[in-house]
Structures are given as structure tokens and as C-alpha cells.
Amino acid sequence: MSNKLEQLKSMTVVVADTGDIDAMKRFAPQDATTNPSLLLKAAALPVYRQRIDAVVAASRQRNNSDADFARDCGLALSVDIGSEITRIVPGKVSTEVDARLSFDEHATAEQARQIIGLYEDMGIGRDRILIKIAATWEGIRAAATLEKAGIECNLTLLFGFCQATACADAGVTLISPFVGRIFDWYKAQGTLPASPADDEGVKSVTRIFNYYKQHSYKTVVMGASFRNTGQIEQLAGCDRLTISPQLLEELENDSGSLPRILDAATATSTDDKPGATEADFRWQLNSDAMATEKLAEGIRSFAADQVKLEQMLLDWPHA
Image (cartoon, rainbow, N blue to C red):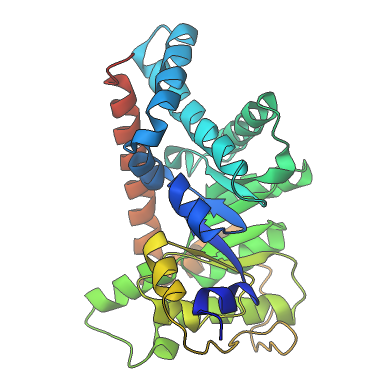
């Protein structure tokens, strides 16, 4: 029998949740996703040193002030690393809009267009890229505009069902519900699941998957942010799962049987289409303490790592 990773790949598109080139080559995922936290880790790897030297030098020539340089260089580096990843994975690479723009619809859309332009300047078509945007109301509206212009989006930091329904109604290409961070919140409240099937993060993705399939939405569900392989196994059959190298290795080393749990052909949901207005969305999100707190925390965390990345580039010895 093949290992669990190979079994998973037979029913779910596996995405690498890393910026580590060597890990991607080893596990051969279909797609890859990055965020400021992963880029910060990737930038510390020796394999990227020469690339960063070049990006920093070019950005210094384009910008006079440190503030302009930091923003420009951070964006240029994310696209540069993303372009390298497109040479390794056959599918799509997600590149994230600055989390500090999470509540600015127009600035989010503008930076997304800038990212696509940078990729196209490097000869990489928009069909290879997903623009990653926080699933705030403003982010979802920006994504709706971008999708109509042929720019596909990955809505991230998704914790609440209202975020998922709004994304589907907006016609976004893909969502990334965060299993592990939901688990973390309930764990902090003193609630641990009796089994992976009882995990609140797993239950959230299962509910969204069944709702999307029941109502024939085209938006792809990509479970993300896993804490253990049990969570992953309980979502076998989900459209996509983005998984860290550590958990990919654990699955690869496990030769046990992995049954399909989610199946689009048999999915059923009792959730009706809400057709939420902005006021409805904000009220539903506000009523979900977990989703409200984890969304805010995630935006702060990604923004903080973006600042750290920009400071690292400002301090880069070859600048």
C-alpha cells in the first residue's frame, strides 16, 4: 500500500505551506502558498541570499527614501521568491497582499494589480498566481472586483462561516479556512476534541465544503494551518489542503490506510444561502468570538512579520 501522502494526493490537491525550495522539490506538491511569516523564514535560508542581494540592489536604485524602499523591496522579494516557486510546482502560487491593507478595499485591489504586473514583467502569467487577501469585508469586496478582471484570489485568515459564504457569493477562486488556529482558540478556552472528527477546525471546513457543494459554488476549499496529521486525515477528499513540510513528512512515513472523508458527489448541507449584506456580515462576524479574535490576531501577526521582513531588508548587509 502507498503511504498516506500518496493516498491523500489521489483524492485531494496537496499544496506546500512553505517557502523552502528544497521541501517543495522533495514533496512535489501541485501548488504552493506563502505569507509574510513564511517569507521571513525563507529569507533566512542560504539558498535565497543571492536573490535577496539582487532584489535589494535593484530596489535601492528605484527608491530614495527608506520607507519607499522597504515597501517596494518587500513586495519585489515576495514576487521574486514566488517566481522561483513557479519553476518547481506545476500549479499556482499564492502571493499575499500587505496585511496592513486589510481594511482598504481600493488599496488592496491596487496592490494586487501591482503584484500581477510584477509577475508578468518576469514572464509569469496571471493564470499561475493567486492573490492572497485577508477575508475582511473590504478584502472580499476587493477580491470580487479582481476576479471580474481575471485576477484569481485566495481569501485567507478565514475562520467564520459568514466569511466563507460571503467569499462564495463574491465569486472568489479559493478560500483558506484555518483549521489549526481554530483548534488553538478552543484549546485556549479549555476545550480539546475527543477525536479529530470532533475538532472545531475540522468541523468548520467540513461545514463549508458541504455547503459549497450543496449549492454548486465553484470556489475551491483549501484547508490550512494544521497542527497534526489527524486533522488532515479527517479532511481527506477536500478540494485542496496546504500542509507544512513537517506534516507532509509524517504522512509520507505512515503506510496506514487513508479513507476518503469528504466527497463532493455525496455532500449535503442544511445551511441556506444567506445573501448577506455588509451589515449582516459584520454582525455575524461580531457574534462569532472565535472568528473575530482570530481574524484580528492573524492580521496583526502577518502585519508584524511584514514589518520584520522590511526591517531585515533595510538592514541587509549588501544594500
